[in-house]
Image (tube, rainbow over all chains, first blue to last red; front, side, top):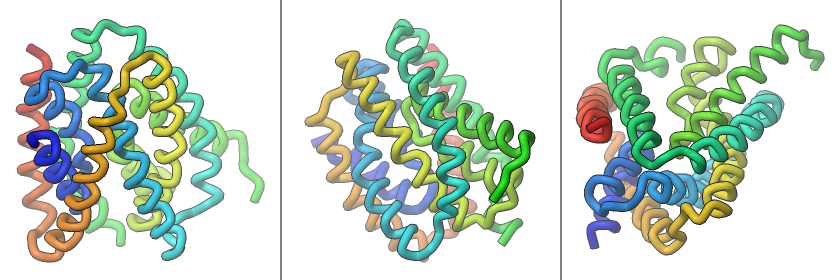
Length: 121
Length: 121
């Protein structure tokens, strides 16, 4: 049951455009005692169907710069291969610490950073 | 459209960093990608949002494949999260029209710092 509550809450945050995925990994690790690697794998896999629907919607509304997306995807795919391979070869304890540091940095950014939406549009 | 060497390197670096984060940490990467597109490449916020999803979708598929190959994935849990997450996403999009996102982003930031610290120790 807890898993559905976590999924629902993270979905609400994502729907409000505040990236719920970021809190999904710690929620799985802390509340459900899932290993760091598997929690990250679940987060990536669960992202796919939602993102696929969102991409189709954004494409129809012409909110995708296809040329830019193509150029950036090439580097992103290379980075993903390196990053994911590295993650899967790291000890869970170390990976968890790396995640923690990253989360704190992003938390500070959310807390102190300005919203680009309000400045640029 | 012809790209200069500088442009290609810049797009390459942004792409690789996004992919590295996606693979290593297991979260989307939109947190980095959207501000990079808005501030460095001058894209409009809503286009940056749509384009980032189009980039992260194939990236997440590659990362998921690598986690799966290393037996670091629980498909049943991912399915439960994705299903409840979609319901939450719909609710979140509706809620967004009622609650100011700025205040929520700050609350979210505090949660991230707490969760991040919890993961360090």
